[in-house]
Image (cartoon, rainbow, N blue to C red; front, side, top):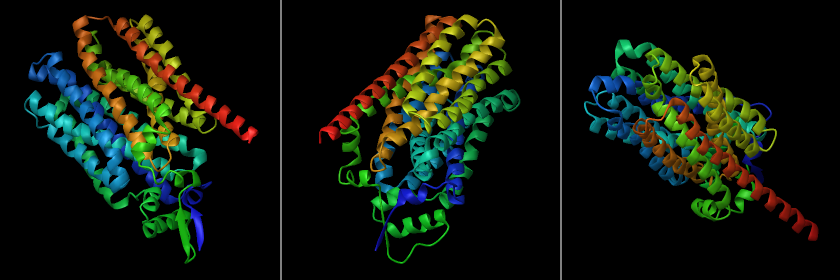
Amino acid sequence: MQTIDINRVIDRDKLSPLQWLVFLLGFLVFFCDGLDTGIIGFVAPSLLDDWGITKPQLAPVLSAALVGMSIGAIVSGPLADKFGRKKVIVTTTLIFAIFTVLCGFATSTQDLTIYRFITGIGLGAAMPNISTIVSEYMPNKRKAFLTGLAGCGFMLGISCGGVLSAFLLENLGWAKVIIIGGVIPVLLAVILMLKLPESTQYLVKKNQHQQARYILEKIQGQAFSENVQFKLATTENNLSDESPVKQVLGKYLWGSSMLWLCCFMSLLVFYLLTSWMPTILKTAGFTTQQFSLIAAIFPFGGVIGATVMGYYMDRTNPTNVIKYSYFIAFLLFILTGFVSSNILLFGISIFMIGALLAGAQSSLLPLSAMFYPSTCRAVGVSWMHGIGRVGAILGAFFGSLIFTFELSLSGIFYVLAIPTLISFIALSLKVMVEKSKSKQQIKSQELA
C-alpha cells in the first residue's frame, strides 16, 4: 500500500481550481466579517443623533460585539478540531449574518447590545477558522502571501462599510445600511454550505480517508491508485496523540504568549480607531463624508500593507516582517500627532498607519497558522484571536473615555503609540527565544 503525505499533494507550483475556490470563499468570509464588524462604527454618529443618546451610552453597543468575538474565537477552536472547520465556519457565518440584520430592527440600546453580542460570537468564530482552512489549502512557498491576501478581505470589508455609509447613510438611515450589511453574508453562508470543502488535514486526523481522497484527487486532477493511505507530516504525526490544548500550552507556550500579547495590544489600537474614529473626527469638526472616507482609508491601507507583508513573509523570517511594521507604525502615530491639523497630511498618515498597523494585524493570522502544526492549529489561531479580542474590548471602552479625558486629536495618537510599541517588543522577544532554541538544537546535533 502506498502512503502519501497530503501536504505533498497540496504543495503545488500552480494552484488547482479547488484551491482557488477555497481562497475566494475565504476572502469573501473575511470581507463579510469586516463589513459587519466595522459598520456599527460608521453608523454610530447617525445613531447618536437619531436616538438622542450620549457617547458613553453607546459604548456597550460598540463593545458588545467585541466581547462576543472573544468568546466565539476561544470556543470555536476546540469545536473546529472536534466537529470540523467547515461546520463551524458555515454555522457562525449564518449567526453573524442573521443577527446583523436584526440590529437594523433594534429599538433600544439594550436590544442592539444583545444583537451585537451574538453577532460578535459569530464574527469571532468565523475569522480564525477560515484563516486556518485557507492556510491548510495553500502551498508552502505562497502560504503567507495567499492566506494574508484572503485576510485582506476583512480590511476591505471595513472600508466598504465606510464607503457604504458615506453615500447611503444620509439618504437611507443607519438601520437600512446595517441590514444591507447583514443580507450579504446570509447569501454567502448558503454558498459555503454547498461549495467549501473540509480541511484534508482534519479529515486524515479523524481517519475520514475517503473524503480526504476525493478532495485530494480534485486538487491533483487525477485519481490515486486503488491502495493508497494518507498521512500528516512526520512532525505532526509525532504530536497527534496529544490534545490540541496541551500542545498550545506546552511546547508552543512561549510563542503563543507573545502572539497573544502582540494581538491584544494591536487589536486594542485597531478597534479603538475603527469603532470611534468617525465619532472622534466628527467631534474634531469633520463633515459626515470627510470622517467616513478618512475612517475608510485606515483599513484600506491595511489591504495594501497585508499584501506586501505576505509577499515578504514567504521570502524571509515572517515574524521579523510584522514586528518591524509595528515599530514603523509606532513612529507614524507620533508623527500623525504633529500633522493632525492638516487634513491632507493627516489623511496620508492615517493611510500609512493602516498599511502598517492594520496590515500587521491581518498578517498575524497567517503567522500563527504557520507557527502551529495542523494538529493544534485551529486552537492556536483561535485562542490568539480570542485573547487578542480582550484588547479590542478595552479599546472600545477606552474610546468612550477619550471624550471624558477631553484629549486632543494629537494626544489620542500619542497615547495609541504605546500599545503599538508593546506589540513590536512582544514579537522581538518571540524571535529572540526562537533563535536561542535554534542555536541550542544546532549545538546538540554537533555534539551528537
